[in-house]
Image (cartoon, rainbow, N blue to C red; front, side):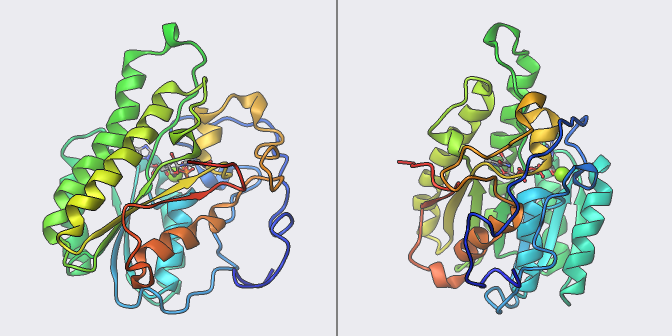
Length: 297
Ligand code: NAD
Ligand code: MG
């Protein structure tokens, strides 16, 4: 494959992965994964679709957010990414890719469970970029637990803090800065509609994000700001190897999709680019499923 526009067979465009069992603490480092996820470093070709845009990618150090940040940069946007402290080396990798695209790339470290972080992040992004007109909220946490009686209150709370409250606070801080034409892209999941019995907290946050985005899209349409959602699954990222799925589900990960394999983050980035680019001007309040063929409502 030479770039994302090359005509080829989607079943074999990326390898059918069969990763060895692996687990990491915290949110995990993508660079330590086997195999290392493909963020489109050697394949994503920009065509000027986000020329001059000022973008904030929340959770842009790795995985889907990392691929999105690289794609935004190659499409001509200046990009601020947020990341957690232990992920600094993953963030550096993405920032190098952004700068190699000839645009501005800035990393801001912080934790979305800290209620003050969202407003800080937005203020720093606005200062670094000289404004803000593209927001992609990709950060999220997923911790597997098969038994509601052992699911700690702290986990239930923190999954909502990161995935839902964090999103709400970022949006709340960002909206006053967003001129007409701006875009917000949120991140749901196939679990929005197909809750896994192993992730009832996570699945409910994804339902909440999707519903919140539908209401917000109507509210902000009146200001000329478009809100849309991407619903990925299953994508090979640090989310799974840091407690997201049981270790014994890692071998063969994603092979049960109709297309027969897991996605690489590089395959999600074009969805964020489309929903951020003015070419999607009449797409408002939509949820774009990128999941290898599983039907969604
Ligand atoms: P990832 O681990 O590479 O990215 C998630 C990022 O979220 C982390 O890098 C981290 O920076 C950020 N994050 C986590 N906890 C945080 C906290 N407390 N404070 C600030 N930031 C925090 O994994 P990914 O799969 O690329 O995840 C991106 C999004 O995609 C998530 O919202 C996830 O729910 C969603 N998603 C992923 C899949 C999949 O199969 N990978 C499927 C459906 C939805
Ligand atoms: Mg990460």
